[in-house]
Length: 543
Ligand SMILES: Nc1ncnc2c1ncn2[C@@H]1O[C@H](COP(=O)(O)OP(=O)(O)OP(=O)(O)O)[C@@H](O)[C@H]1O
Image 1 (cartoon, rainbow, N blue to C red):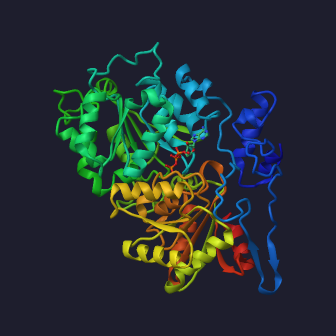
Image 2: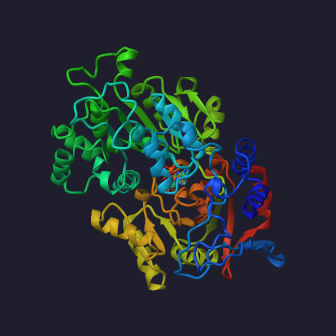
């Protein structure tokens, strides 16, 4: 129980504390295994030390009135270790209690998913009860399984054989679930998550329809395999649907993952086609107003994101039927939420004053509570060197660095490589193969620093990522939240460092206020991350 005693001492770890008390009450004796944790004392790997990790205390440098901290846990460079889950976002109940069918429960156990996360615990029953939902909880909290599990309970080879749903599904050739994601990488990640649960013999029940891949091969696979579920990017799904090769009129589920991104101008036409056609019976005029009953007999709409600006609330009301807002600790009718704010909502708190509490609360819920945030002021020409010193100071092994401009991004990779740090670029100008090869190398530890742009800010799940660096500042706090969320996934340790020039500090301060998290000024000196003491005092107010 060493880990829990650590967890309960951490002031930010309210989830962990709540979790402990509930499990104690309802589930008898508390063991790490019963909670899905691997004990640090279990000899899982011969090479690993069985000793609990030491948390090195902050190092005081009184002369300069500064405090230095160093990332612990990951040691020798090049040796990849998985990051322990420190602040558990898990719920107190089991998957069994959520009403999932036996075959799916078996697969979950086989894949090592033992305890649902809080948002899964809230979303699964709501979706199983046929509600349209908007799922909102912080990055890395398990939103993907929160919608995949109830869908797999009702469609495809793992479904509950005793219930045939509402009997409304269409012809056998019809797709039963369409999942839309804004990038190829995220689309493929969702496909892999489904394939993992389906297993090798059933994996043809899901088909990817992402852009950049061979379209005729995708169409051929649709015809031959008759998948129950398709996952893809908006453009490719709309294209194949318009060509008459994707039969979705009888579709039961439409999932819009990263919904606020899917609402952006770039996807407008494709999204319009998808929303109008998926789950709409042929012959019906999509513009004709429908009764609530007629709407219900059609598809169930599920929208998902860590950030839910007003535009999403408005879209959910117009595309869904009495939708619910599902958060980790709340399930409320979306009707009870304000849907108006300024037209150009740029950040979670930029609503009118009457809505600001609500928006602030949501902003608070978009970032993993265990993340640590810093910023470091430097000159433009020293940014890459500062990044390198930051990586060394924190001893980070799996780093995502965000930039806004592709040419500068390539320069940064060149400079890092020239200084002996293994780096690679990932952006939309690269072909599909180059993108997936780079991502694979990053995930298996061959690349230490992935220099990328907004393409990787959404949904990308690399559990080992221990540091996110903003080499260019994000455009607003919503983009900050999604970039930051690439680290500290599922309660793991994570650090976010924004490297900026002096005139940009006000932008960092603004994001700190909007996101209601402390972003501390720091420097990298003598291989250490150093925080000013004065800065610490002012940040107490933010906390
Ligand atoms: N109940 C669970 N037990 C253990 N691991 C889980 C569980 N649920 C999800 N995970 C894992 O947690 C990681 C994060 O999940 P996921 O990608 O769904 O997060 P997310 O909330 O969608 O994040 P983002 O907002 O960044 O898209 C994934 O690797 C996933 O496999």
